[in-house]
Structures are given as C-alpha cells and as structure tokens.
Image (cartoon, rainbow, N blue to C red; front, side, top):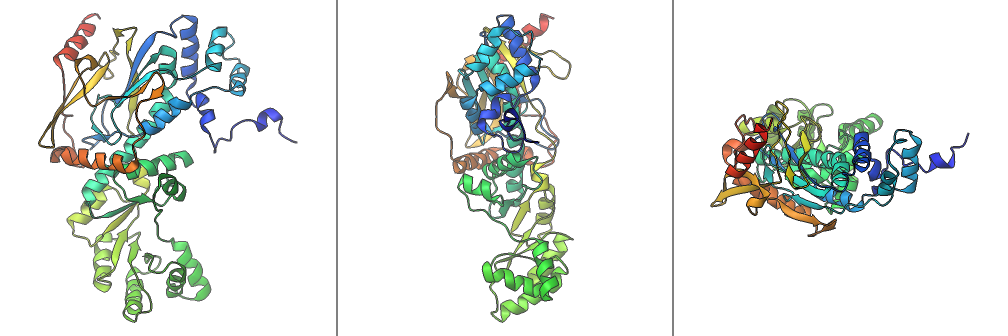
Length: 452
C-alpha cells in the first residue's frame, strides 16, 4: 500500500533540515506560547539565561561551545504551513487562541543575543548565553539552545582536558562517530572536539565540512579478512600499504609483539616504510614499551576507550605513545546539565527560589580578572555594571559579527585553559568555583529573597 501524500511530506527522522527545527522542541514550549498569547503576555520583553548550576564531577571549568549552531537556528526559525497543519491535527491546541496560529505562521526571531565567545572558560552559574526577546520567542527556543550548547560544551571541555593532559605535541584524533548519540550529534561532537583541542576527526563528512583532513588507521576486520584468505597478517599489512604507503598499521589483532617483530624485519630489509602503529587493547604501558624497543623509529598510536585519566596514567608511566584516538568516553559520559531560566520580564528581575535550584535574578555579566595573562577570579554581576565577557552577537534578530573560524576558537580555548591555575586544570578537581557576586547582584538577590 502506497503512503499518502501527507506522509510522504513528513521529514525523515534521520535527515532533519533547518526547515524542521521549529518543531524540534518540547511540547510545553508551544503550549506555554499559546498560553502567553491568550493572556496577552507574548509581546512582553523577557530575558532568559543559559548556564550550568553545577559542573560535572572532577571538572574545574567548562569550555563554552555551540554558539554558532545556536545563532544559525535562531536565524532560520520558522514554521511551515504543513507543520502548522500537523500541530492543529493533534487536537492538543483546540482551545488555543487564533492569534497563536498567526504567530507561528509569521514566526521569526527578532530578539537580542548576548554570549561569551566559543572557547571561553566559564564556571557554575555564569551565563553562557542570554536571550532578550518577546516572551514567546525567548521561551520557544529553549529546547534547541540547550541541546546544542550543552552537548558541544561537554565535548569541547573533555577535548580541552585531554589536550591539557596529553601535551601540545601529542596527536589527538576524534574517533567518536560510532558512539555519538546520533548522526547529527556525531557531526557536532567532531566540531566541538577540534575546537576544544583535538587535531582532527575520523568522521569524513565532518572533517571535509569543517575544512580539515580526515584521519584514521584501519580496523581489525581488514587484517582478519586478508589473513583468512591470504594466509598471514603480513599479507594484510602489505596489501594495505600497496594502496596507502606508510599509513599507520593496527598491530594487535593477534599478537602485537610478533607483529611488531615481523614489521621490524620488513623495515630493516627496506620492504616497507612505516610511520606509525596502533595499539587498541591490552596493557598499553607494557606493550608500548616493548613495541618501541622493537620499532624505535616508529610512532605509537593508542586507542581503546581512553580518557584524560587513562592518558595521565600512561604519561606518568612514561609510555612511549605519541598519539591517541578518543571515542566513546569523549562523546558520552557525565552530561553538562545546563539550564535556561527566566531572569527578567518587562524590566522586572525574577529569580527561582526552589531549594537547591535557586537562580540569581536580573540580566547578568561576567567580569574577569586577568593579571599578566593569568586568571585571578570572576565576579558575577548585573549587566548594567559594565562590559564583560558576554558580547552582543545578535541584535533585533540580525547577527552582529561573522562566525569565528574553528582555528580561532581552538586558539581561544588553548589561551583560556593556559591562563587557569593548576588546581582548576586538575582532572580530579573538587574545589569551589572561583566566582564571587558583585555587591549589586548580592543586594538584588537578597531583596527578592526577602519578598518571600
């Protein structure tokens, strides 16, 4: 039975386009918008801030990331006639005012966006981004902004920590596509990883889209397939090098020491040129030392569920490893639990008072103290107190500056991490965020608390 024309026009769940993003939201953003319209609040100017209440365990800082995709989304926000018809067909909005549908039909983001530049080190309770817009617009965009900024900030921060631990000279490759939470997440993870400090990615589409050379080695399956048909692991290595001369070889499909010994014989005889070998399993400290003694002029690349703690352990043991492939633990793990909260409406500061989830009121700014290129502390204050880290990046729905190249974002990340004291860069950080409140913000917070 053929699909109806209506079903044929539905977007594929695996190939979303920017035209679909209006509906890529939580239902309550739309139901609240309908309520705002009905109560004549939709045009009230509101300010929402996106921030993290508490950093993930062991993290001393975060690297803000995802602004480029946030602005792209705000630029293209719209609802098609087909989408509006689909919403109406649900029956959920049968009591919504007619003007709600008019609002969606002509939807366009017209607000202002203040944000810290991508690659900026930030701490708990500091706004990564602030939206100042008509209430319905500021409310509607919450879901997408949290999705793209939370995830990319996590990846960029993990990448920055990995780079900090591995050192400037190590080669770090993003291998996480197979473990990322979906195809779009894989693309965003590759972008954030490079911006956070990795050299490139094995994701071909991401690398070419971002203007980077994709990088990778080989899988065990090639060795197994050719060995089964041709009779030896050597045959597999020779076959691969016929098409990719000098490329790194994966040597732990069977016995890594035997493979290294055989490769050393071939290298000595001038039969092959070898740039690097990869170890993907086993005791990497012991194996890398043994392989290096057999192949002293060949670089060793390691992979296999590595993270910053594993790399720190390898480095502390002086393992002769010059590069790492980072996958599962880079693109998954403890989330960055960013939130998006109303801080002002119609020039009236607001705050959430729930125990453990209190927010600071009013539009805020981050004032950073830097001395001789070194971080000395942050003051979280009111935006009216002066210029700080948050910059106006969109005004009246129009971008105010071009998107930063990824290379510039990475340099900013490197610079910000290098400015932090060693205790904040410790991968087992358990201290208190180095942020104080300005007297004005402290007074406003206490005033709203006292109102009960």
